[in-house]
Image 1: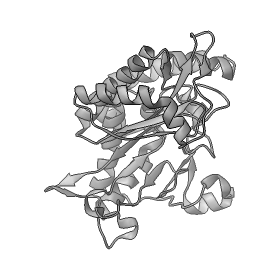
Image 2 (image 1 turned 120 degrees about the vertical axis):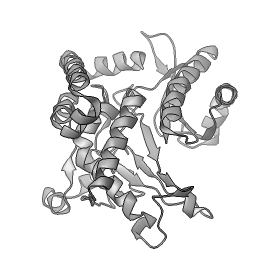
Image 3 (image 1 turned 60 degrees about the vertical axis):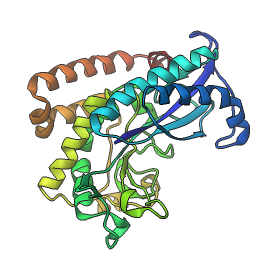
Image 4 (image 1 turned 90 degrees about the vertical axis):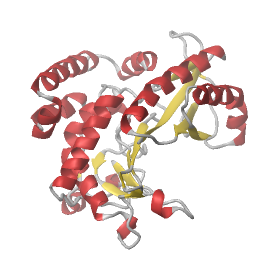
Length: 317
């Protein structure tokens, strides 16, 4: 497992944040601007045993992505906590401020923390089947089916802030519908194409409905529980889609079994609390306490203007 984090760089203090550079996505100009900061961040990550995978400037204003290599779930969750501290502290050393908020600016692209996951058995990728559609094995299909079965409540763990739902909207490569598809960046679950020359060990699934406001330990536990429930109960996934589901009519989405994801944190919390799987995995005491805190958060932030909500989360995360 591994998180694929996006973050935005700002200048100024908390009362006057400005994007560090209104750059062009994937451009060498943007890379040149961020080069000293990124090089230092990579060095600091490697010193604590976190191996970066790839870097590039992203599509948002001042937005960047620096991904990590995968590891086991507990190590990956540890790495996420340490990674965010290193990025923030390194940015500070360059008189910059790094925010992992899902929507730090109302009019900019949102920042996700997508979760990539594969299951292995006897040193082989259990999600890979060269003869299957998308090269996704039956076990992989069941896993996706389980995640989609429980995704409404899972979002309370993977997208657990009011700001999360400013990001989850059609046309933002963040997913607004409970669907899956090969290389579909508008799906909640993307099935990436395997790597050239190494298909047998590169099959994974990507949960795009996820951001850096999450507790990674709870998010991973919920995701694994949902997927393993799918494997145990042979849940074939509904809702395959190879286009932006927002481009379909409601009748077309209904025919494919595609449902809208929760539009608010409170809706996700209601689904989380009502899901017997999460009650079993986390226990009633944790579920009740978590739901109470998150509902209070959502009620507080619901009273604020969108700009104020984004600004507060920009500083919190």
